[in-house]
Image (cartoon, rainbow, N blue to C red; front, side, top):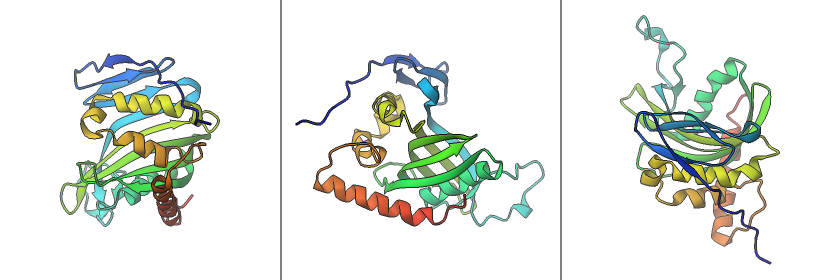
Length: 228
């Protein structure tokens, strides 16, 4: 018996207003914002996508008492050499503000093939403003110097009851994003299979199963560092 494969969603290409990129949008989805190559989309039942998002960050050991007047003290302080720790540390600001809670890492896989800084793919769950969400994303941290850097992320998310249903169309839209076509070079499909489909019924060959087990092991290691 063959594994069921969801039909490929029909995507309608939409260009960003500033001409910096484009993305295929599935039925029921809306491109809320597109500019500087990044995109924000909202979908049915609370599903959402945040692609190419950026934040300026300080190194985790940066002493904020030395900040010059006018510099936002809430700039995240993260490990510039570890994208998983950077994600946890950047998320801590949302936890501190009471917006996000119950962050749980389910799978972590390094992405050394991504041609920018240090990157990792993560499958995780969290509660945002009281609403539980399942998510899958690519996180990158790039050191500008010893004290500061850039934090990039692209994430797809949906409520637990619809994540399995929405993942194929979210993956298709992510893959159609003009930046993905240039940088991901087909690796998104394998990443979604190994990491994104954790908790999704699917068939894995022996090598993929080994990758999945390593991702689960890495997630457990980093989960111990999260304070919920």
